[in-house]
Amino acid sequence: MFTLFSDKILKNKDYEKSKDRSKIVTKTGVIGLVINLLLFLIKFIIGTMIHSISLTADAFNNLSDSAGVLISIVGFKSASKQADKDHPYGHGRIEYITGLFISLLVILVGYQFVVSSFKRILNPNIIDYQTITIIILALSLIFKLFIYSLNKNVGKKIDSKANLAIAHDSIADVFATITVILALVFGSYTSFPVDGLAGVLIGIYIFYSGYSLTKSTIYVLLGEKPDEALIENLKKEVLLNENIYGVHDLRIHSYGPTTTMATIDAEVPHDIDLILLHNSIDKTERAVLDKYNIELVTHIDPINIHDTDYIESLEKATKIALTEKYVKSIHDFRYTGYDDNKIIIFEAVVSSKDTTEEDRKKIKKSLKNKIAKEFKNAKKIIIYIDLDVSML
Image (tube, rainbow, N blue to C red):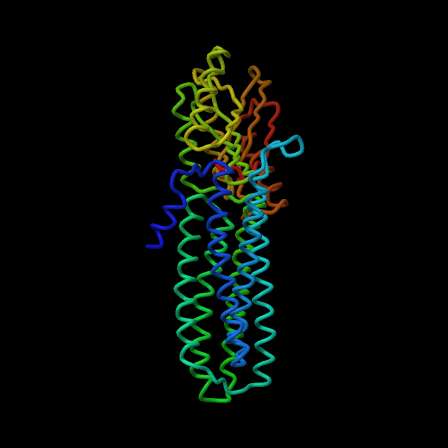
């Protein structure tokens, strides 16, 4: 049932267009705003009447959710603005910043709950509740599950960090409300600070949820590694070009969910007609844009696949390089010059996670010595260390 509702909101919408994304988030936001404000009023009134700190805390959690929804609506409206001279790639990253604000708000609420709940532990009291309170809280669970399902489905469909953050927060609210119900029931039979302990548990859970959301959003803003499936698909798409023999150094830059740019190095024949190559690569870049909505820029690396000496030298250098523990591959290999005056140049891709700057210097020195022993007629050997931060 919940899925059908989200499908109705998403119907006939282009997820790649900022304006359509803004309309979708506005609709889900207004629904969430109304529900959360209603839940806040009901829980706050009842919590105040029966002097329940956990119920009052849960009420303010709903109020913070309302603020989060407002932030998401405003954020998406700003993100949908067209590119201008100061922001040539658009304003899409505001979506990520919006998600970050919501996450920080969740952390703040969790902290406040923990503090207020500790005060209740120090000053416990028996809670007097009525059955209607439990019924209202049980109904609020249904509404929260609805908000969770709606935002989760929409967030996954349109790749919205803000919607996914709201979904994550909503499911946390479900567990929080269940904890409140248990606290009310057991707290009515004892002066033991069940209510306060429940509030602490709710606060810690909400705090952790906010931390997790903040962490994932910051990763996106800093530039996280894209999905492996996307990397492989882009590689296969580029290699469909009959004039491209190999690819490396794929780098993807996100300027928001609707604007992504990428660069890639492509190995091409050294003697191919430039106009033919240009038209061929241009066709591939358009295919990538149409299929994946990614603006691809291709850097060409000319190679002579008919030169047996070059091919044999590349194979030897690759084999030697892979004897070094943290070297993953080599590329941009050049073996130029004549007789005993040859120059070897290449880039060695080294693990960024397992090595330090000092380690890489040692790897470079060791690799250079090994290459010199194998290629005795090389007058000069130039090796660049390239970290595996690129995708290929």
